[in-house]
Image (cartoon, rainbow, N blue to C red; front, side, top):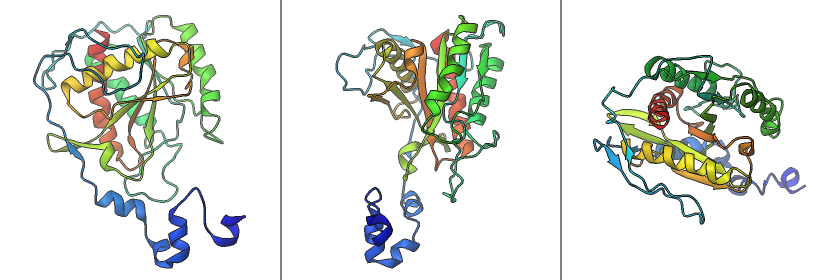
Length: 282
C-alpha cells in the first residue's frame, strides 16, 4: 500500500530519495556507480607451488594443507588427456540459464534466451577449452530452467542433474554455472595483462549432506586459481541453502562476473577456469 500510494518501496531505499528529490528518478544510479569503479589489477603468479589457505572463516570446514602443483599461467604444458566422450569427466549446466551480460545496463537486457549472448556461451567456451586443449570430455546441458520464473530454477534443474549422474558414473566434477548480479562492476572485474576479466566466485550450500566434501573441492579449486592469479577469485560464499548440491559430492556452483560485465570478459575468465579445472583433474 505504501508503495502504490507514495511511490516509496521499502525494498528499494533509493525510492525514498526519488520521492523527495524528483531529479534523482531520472538518474541511472547503477551506471553512475559503475562508471566510478576501478577494477583490481591481478599480476599472474610465476611460482609453482602454494600452501595458501582460503579466505573462509566458517568453522569446521576442511582445510587444504597439502602442497598444490600449479602450472605457470603462461605455460601451455598442462598434461593433455586422451579424449573419451563415452566417459565424460565434467558436466556443466545452468540453473539460471537465461542470465546474460549487460555492461551498458540496458533495461530488460539482464536475461535472454539467446544462447550466444547468455551464460550458456561461457559454458560452451569452457567445454571447448577443456576438450580441445586438455582432452577432458565435457557434457554441456543447455536446458532452460529459469522460465517462466527464476524462483523454481533449482527445482527444475534437479532432475536434469539426476539424469546425468545416473547415466555417467565417470563424472568427476559437476558445475552449475551462473553469473552474479550487482550494481557495481568494480568488485567483479580484474585487469590481467591489460585485458579485462570477469572475476569468479564459488558458492557452497551448507544445508546438505555433501557440504564438507563439496567444500573440499571448491577450496582446492579456489587455491589453484589463487596460486596462478592472486586475488583474482572473489572467494567462496557459504550460504544456508542446498543448491541441489545434496545430489553429488562432486558438485560446485561457479559464478563468473556479474550482469554489468561483458560477455567477452566472462569468456576470458572461462578459459582460465578451464585450465584450473584441467589442473584439478589431472
